[in-house]
Image: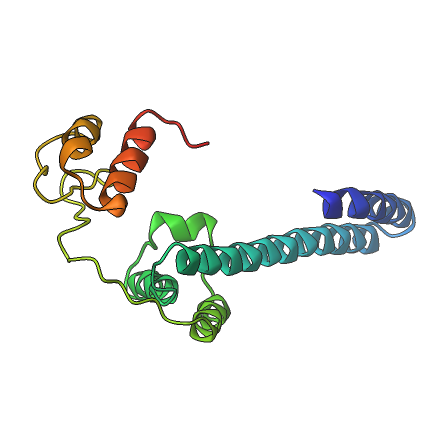
Amino acid sequence: MEDQKRSAPLTWVGALGSILLAMASPQAGMAALTGTLAGTRQGMISFTQQNEQEADRIGIQVLQRAGFDPQAMPSFLEKLLDQARYSTRPPEILLTHPLPESRLADARNRANQMRPVVCNLPPTFISPKRAPWECTIPDVTSLPATCWISGLKATCVSNMRRNMARALQAMEASKYG
């Protein structure tokens, strides 16, 4: 947003100059206007790519701090790239979030610089079986998250299970703060 505010006066000056030039030579004026608008658009694209890189950097850090493998992000991006490569229509996420090879390489390099995370959870701890945002916890797989809290309070021996149940209950209630 700040970058757009800074470049707006330059765009206006370029457009005004192009209009004045069009009075003398219509073709040159149109060429100048096209160049001005193309330069403005390129600035927006570069700004968006910088935001994507920053979001990737933060995302990998968040994954690592949350106890997840930071290599999961480049692995996911690589799967998206493969899907787009052999398809006539890319996955919907790639229509709004471009995935050049440089972004994948940058994510892989960042993940390689982080210390690996060893996950000691059993493979059945989190299992996305029912819907994309619902997870199951062993012994309570058929209950919704709102029931997990009451079911886990008395018998929970693991803080992680209790915290997972609370997080899922808050997610169902749309309380993200």
